[in-house]
Image (cartoon, rainbow, N blue to C red; front, top):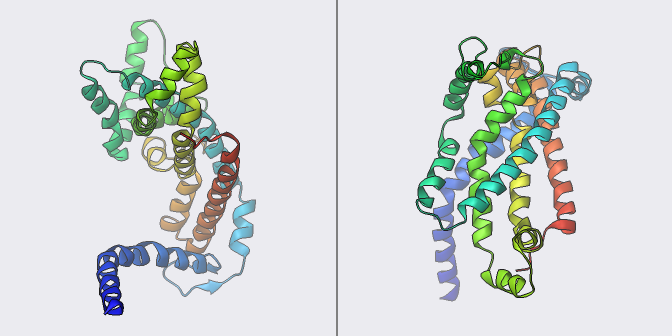
Length: 294
């Protein structure tokens, strides 16, 4: 009787999980395994695949465009990550206060997050247009001649970073705000009794207890940073002269424009290894600075 109940329970559980598991296998695991096999071949979608061993990986690691795209991603992350964390923390602290209309402010800051990247990129491409963009028009009112933002070697990547921070800051704010609201008031009462002021409470109480949320944001933001694609494709197309090209854009171009499926698959697995390695390093380093005791 007990065995029959367990079997019935297992059937019910499998029944609920089956749709999700089917999607996982069909649209994630099988394509991943297929790309791993394809990465060892030379295949253009039309002719039969030809096994070439690790030639695609060797070529990808020596390819100048691949290395340039990795350096561009590094530049993007170094500008994006500190900015989105700093502004996200600032807004989270401000939105954690009991202010009139606070819910409305929270909605406003989260609206860009739920907006399509394509729509956002098209709007910002117009705003940053060097000849007819609103940004340069407003700068001209105060006597400043703005650059051709998205076609300028210096300003193209900072423009991508600024737009990315603007769109993602709401997500980071919500995560950190949830972390702030999870901190017990008892810690602040104890700190007040000990004579700690506002700044001391922030750096000695708030930040240490917020580190789990900061760590989560750090991991997710880094993974998303390495997969930078949508805004680059729409706003700059990787230009000017490859200054904003990314590895995902290279993978897209090689796979669906040049039809070098094997080479593109090798690049995608190189990107996977990089992201996996960075995530493992983060997991190890968290033991030194993340505080889970509350």
